Length: 385
Image (cartoon, rainbow, N blue to C red; front, side, top):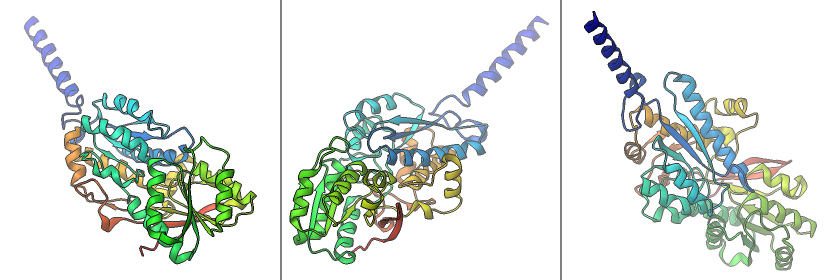
């Protein structure tokens, strides 16, 4: 009897050990129904700070993807984890080092901004953790040799020319003033616009980093003196809103054109409805309001707001990683190989990456949006030439 009792205990112990082993390591393919149960997907971007709205859009999209997945896989969930960078390149490296310590994380949605990407991506590269950014558009990010880097939208070499062509062919501007905030993103985008607009540029200026300058009177004076009918702003929505407000107060009626960093209701709130009216905002994305399936309805039900810029792209990125986990890519090396070979059709676009991590050029979309009656609404797909 004693022997049988000991044998029974040993058998039970072995069974428990096997069950635990089946769902304990991000380096294994075992778990409930062949899926890993203990893995994580991380979001890395601005959830606080002067440009937090853009990060929150993306965070919500990625979180919705994970929440929907877990509702269908309650026996074997994936954990979603947030890392709030505040969009600050100075804070990004420390946060990235914190992220890479967690061996359960097999993929990163982000970083969201170009400056923080330049600071954090070398750390992700050293750790071998794949990243897919929904919004960091500086072209040079794909030239660093980072194998983990992927971009789910077109870069500024697609958005900048599209904005420049809109200024030339739709607005037909003869005099254009170009301003940027000296950030990796803002300066890069402004440079691309200047290449297209060419001799129509009658003046340029640089302002302080987003959220750190409130008085734009010197820039307003230069713009007013130039006689420009269009002002292009490279930067984020907080500064752009203040600049537009002060331009209007000074009697400047030039149309403000800006990129995806300004494509946010926060711009209208800062500028005021009347001043913001008619502003043109570009984005290397399709309107989130026109995303496929039940995304818009489900997003609004989850967060009580309509999806914003890049919400749909981040949702697609989250689902890319989740499909990868379902397919047995249960560590970062496997996930990296999976993402490199991806050909995924989501609710916002189809995604396939070049060997440098760029979105396949045939899949790049650029839209122009217009501020109308206090809202950012789709205007037209931006002209390519």
